[in-house]
Length: 159
Image 1 (cartoon, rainbow, N blue to C red):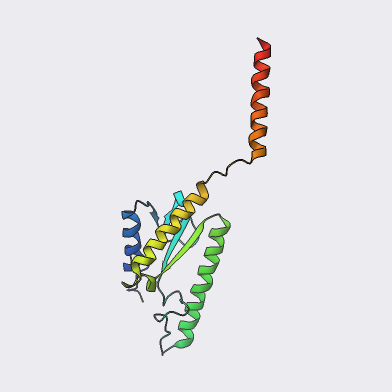
Image 2 (image 1 turned 45 degrees about the vertical axis):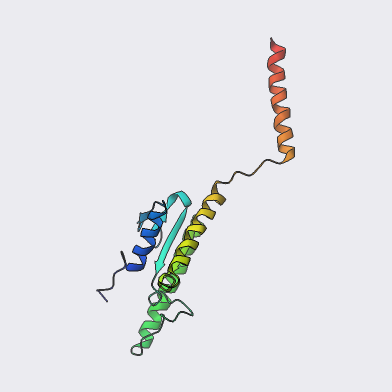
């Protein structure tokens, strides 16, 4: 297990190259955030986890199959990983971060482009949602006009 990498994995590199080519800038494995997310996009207030289907127990995935030997150990390990992932996501969302999980099976060649395009679409949507300025209501507009008239009317009467 010491040969298993946790950083710079092939699925992670695919996501990083795609995002960078689309103009998204990010930080890697931010040490101050819970769970050390794989990618941190501060401008979008979003973190991205690129998870392996086996190690993080992707339910319903054909790549998540427990080994035939030492089943109890592997089952406990995967359950512990799932619980830790859920706790980290909870902490991050309570801090105001958006959490996106990209699974290894979603980056297989047949569905890779669709997954990456939907990731970019989601990030654009988050950006617009966070930076949208709500239009003032008609009542608020009338109140602002009245305040300006009162303010400028007071200046004119002083002269």
